[in-house]
Length: 216
Image 1 (cartoon, one colour):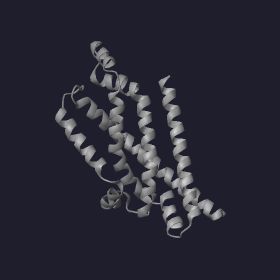
Image 2: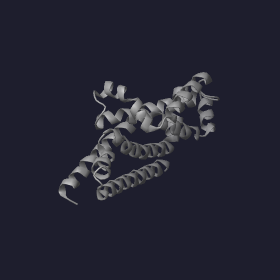
Image 3: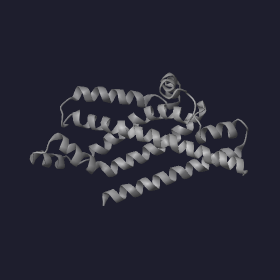
Image 4: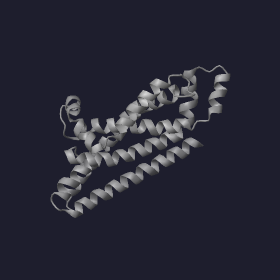
């Protein structure tokens, strides 16, 4: 492999990491409160607002139902408005985040539902406020599962960021299309696939290790 191609792969890998971690961070910052809202306002929740929980759930599921490649196109005007352009790494973070928010919200909701209701009842019996229950019971008890949810979201964003390369988002997906597919360079395509596989393995191993550490 030539030094030029190696340098391009390195730059594309850094662009992919930027897209993945930035969009995942936004997904967690917005998605976790959404998950908490759906948990605490749903049936048997701390706040009895089932209608509100249902509306938010419908919106979350509606966004999740849109294929990412279609979402990329639909969000081009919004991406231009926020990022000033629809091309490049920074622009790709917008649709990646909007796709990641409902995805993380749902799997975080599942993690939060696994918390033992007996612990919540015990804190209630001791006079704990709703905020105390959320802060001291729900989130800490669900933390290992939430880390698992974060790991899955990161890996999903890796795949989505590669797909974003079809609209010139940069990163490994763009590299595979421009230098691999369009120029019939199978070697570059296989190198990109190898880097993506290694990236996913590292994320999964680190996520599993952190989740195990939090359980002890």
